[in-house]
Image (cartoon, rainbow, N blue to C red; front, side, top):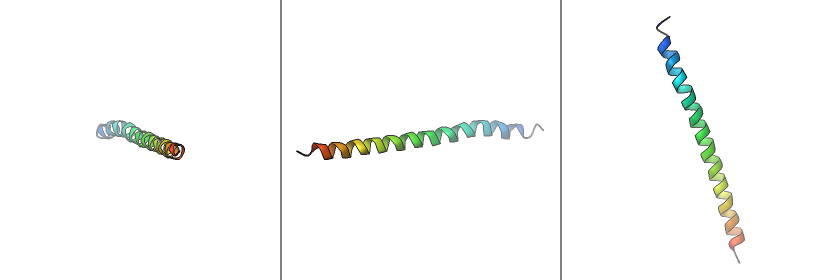
Length: 48
C-alpha cells in the first residue's frame, strides 16, 4: 500500500504538466495563426 504512494504523487505532478504543455502549444498555435492572418491582411491591404 505504501509502495504505490510515490506513483500517485508522480502522476499528480505529471498530469498538470502535460495539461499545461498542451495548453501552451495550443496558445502558441493560435497566436501563430493570428499573426499569420494579420501579416497577410497587412500585405494585401498594404499594396497601393
